[in-house]
Amino acid sequence: MKPATRLRPALLSRYLRTEVFGRECCIMVDRTGSTNADALALELDAPHGAVVVAEYQTAGRGRGDRTWFSPPGANLLFSVLLRPPAPATAWPGLVLVAGVAVYEVVRGLVAAPVRLKWPNDVLIYGRKVAGILCQSRLGKNPAVAVGIGLNVNMTTRDLPRDLRTSAISLRDLDGRAHSRARVLALLLAALERQYDFWRRDRKRVWRAWEAAAHLRGAPIRVVEARREYDAVAQGLDRAGRLLVTIRGRRRTVVSGDVLLLKE
Ligand code: BTN
Image 1 (tube, rainbow, N blue to C red):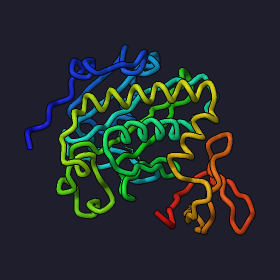
Image 2 (image 1 turned 30 degrees about the vertical axis):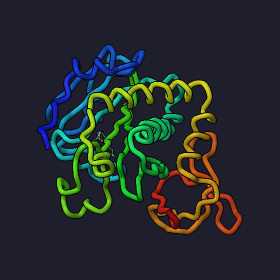
Image 3 (image 1 turned 135 degrees about the vertical axis):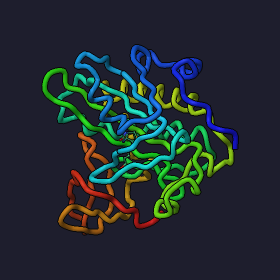
């Protein structure tokens, strides 16, 4: 394979069609700890829609206490700083907003069945093609960093052995090297669009998310900190929390992992 083209702001701007995201502030670095941490460490007056992109993260964070590994220069690792006017209690829903955006873009790029898994996974054939992590900073000028890792051009051989069966990239699916600048531009535009929908009408985004997750009626196993149980997924509530039934009784899942019992 040809060596990857380094991401540069000039290359991104060739493709960028957003109004706000990535326009006023877009920082691209070769190596950092975590783009989420960097976005949250921007000045207090950093603009809504500021973007931090890295070629490599030394301490990429996943959900819970997990890490996010991505070989240098192969994939997309970025965070968008948002300042939603909604109360911070509504911000956890942003992970679903980003999920719908990533889902739309990935579906447009590869001819493979893409599926969302609550709350933050984007899967193809049961393997992770992207992960999303939202982290916030409260206090003066509160903000939330929406962090997205999308596996674009790596091959499974670039991964540590233990990740080889659980991850997949766009290139694994079609054998092509994708322009990361173009894919990043598509993701920023989709995120901006879904974020606008979310601000105006949450339900619209939740419905799109439910459809992309094939959620209603799906048998799942819910793994919470202290217990594990089988349930049937019913959809999302107004705040984007997962509604399930266990032997006909309704329950709301606030945190935890979900395993799909049937692909
Ligand atoms: C997960 O699947 O658990 C979430 C993974 C999120 C990874 C992205 S990569 C860019 C941003 N910076 C991080 O440290 N994490 C997110």
